Amino acid sequence: MTEFVFSPPAPVTIPVDDGRVFPVRRVFCVGRNYAEHAREMGNDERDPPFFFCKPADAVVTGGAAVPYPPQTQDLHHEIELVVAIGTGGTDIAEADALQHVFGYAAGLDMTRRDLQAVAKKAGRPWDMAKGFDRSAPIGTLVPADRIGHPGTGAITLSVNGVERQRGDLGDQLWGVAETIAYLSGLVRLEPGDLIMTGTPAGVGAVERGDQLVGTIEGVGTVGTTIS
Image: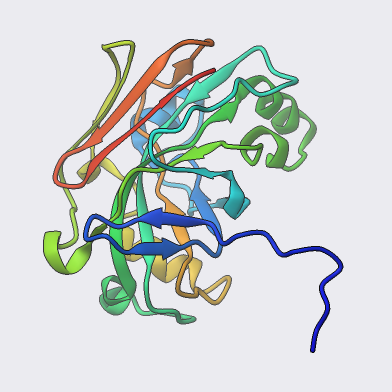
């Protein structure tokens, strides 16, 4: 019998709206996947997709608070469509990609923008700008077999009741099927993987006490308070 050095951590899960829970394996994030956001960050509109990761235990659910993280003076919000992979595969054809999706949720990619800027300038990884503790609030998952695969629909984020971000899922440079196909050529996707698909324009700073509410038409909401 295997004896662990210490008790393994509890699995990270996301609630599904039918009462089940979805176990999280990995969290992949697509960078600069909306044209206006790409422009506001000073980049070309149709570069090949690139990815960074957050640890699974960065996921926050149930509207739990996000502590203002250390070593930053510029914490930003980014509202994103989250894709939950239910069936794994490698080199998945774009035409088959949506068959691998379990469901969708609204999520927030919280970002230490000042640390990201330093990393970009130095050509270093973004890990500490993107993958810090509790940096991925995610709402309730809704199964694709009930809502389909949303290709259009408003995606918005408000801070303290004031709208900050507004876009449409149809504005994504790389759609969900394209993204799955591309990413599965880099790594084998597995059940439990999440893909955060990028954010529209309007990202900005938040402070302690701010209340964030993100909404994706036809998918759901995500909310948190910065503590």
